[in-house]
Length: 388
Ligand SMILES: [Fe+2]
Image (cartoon, rainbow, N blue to C red; front, side):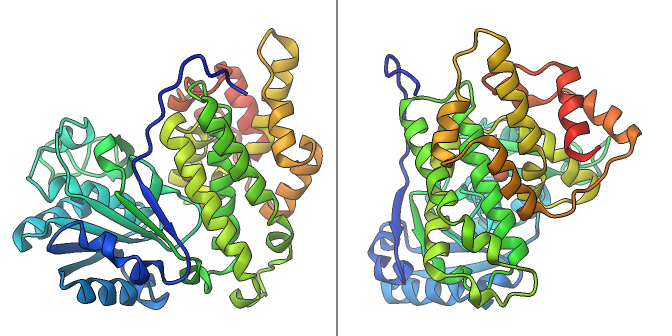
């Protein structure tokens, strides 16, 4: 465990977990303002009941609201400027995000733009000093965005905000303490209808957050405690994850396991809020933009080779070992963990030699955030072992 000699820990999100928490704990929503910009994706928040619960809670509080339901997977700059403009036009004084990572991330940027229209580079460069207060209702258990100060968006336009971006769209991350949700309402009932693919991929994303946070240079005493607890919670639910097949009805997955995975995801969010993510998240991004691979799966494809490399480097150099403690949290050595991961991932994608060479030559932003600094050769090796 990291020593307590220095510590800087900040987590201002109040977590309200439990069945019907949006309605039962609506007095917290009442603190946020008079009129909400409710930010959702196109359909799922209505199907899973979260939107109806939010409307019931707002109405009971006597709060007005306006709906922005045009957030797509991998939300764009155009989308958040549209949502922000709607908030200003409608006089919204707070934001309520409902959905997976995409609506929550979009809502955070909309909270900034809901105060005033600012140039795109000021948004991405975090040159803003205020944001509308935000509450989040996650409807998947993976992103952890409900407890982080991050918004990951796709930048699609040039400096004028209209013409297509030179060199094509790029994912960009905004991180500011102003983006922490004030409240996160965790209610696993919204996940009851999630299929095997989403359930498994989001669980792997949460696990990646906890593992990468534990192996971050910025890990600290508190983030380690949270990371290990999140890993334990996810590993406690490996059995139902393995038993959940593509042919299983969503209802077969135990409600209690969904509750634990949702909490584990929020805790893993609290970890990366402190530590950021590490190498797998940077590397997996290239699977997502080139192959449209699900974000959680992309991280999962890299975890085995990444952890193997960590263990090898720890053994070869005078690096304070982290892997034995990670294995204690996993409840097993790396090899049986890798076997579980393979079962969850199934058939791996295969990259061409040209793709491997291209990706292996690219700088990895979060490589620097990893507790061991990877060489470009090692990055290529991890890609090759993962999808070669
Ligand atoms: Fe992630």
